[in-house]
Image (cartoon, rainbow, N blue to C red; front, side):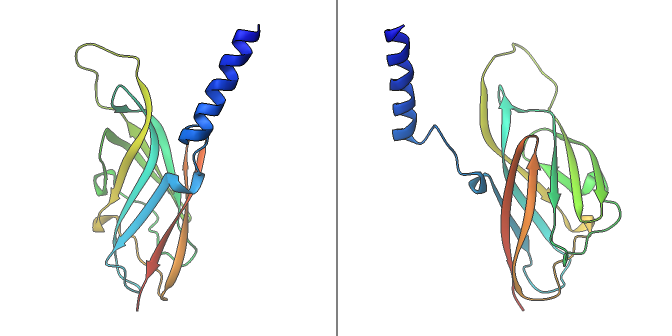
Length: 158
């Protein structure tokens, strides 16, 4: 019993000194818009911390809630959204929230059991018709990936 307790304390201490025990949630997502000017129809690039199985993204829905000042169309075609890994299964829009369903690529060959957090990049191209806020400033977008919740910030200039 003492050995088990000692091992647990040692692992917790190791995690605390290496940073593996806790990850700041806001470090889990970044967002950029291009061009970053008032009112422009923009390409939006989102990077989110996502679970990968054997290098393949976990099937999930990533929801991005844009600020109230953002122009979000009533629908976005799946062809306007691109992933760095996996495929877009569907895109749904509800008010200012855009949800992207992620489908991993098909498995080929041997399967493995490696599960890691990695970076999944989501790009909404200009055909998504997302429009920047009409006023310069710093804005926040809420990002949800399963049970993880992040806040990403972007700046708009005049």
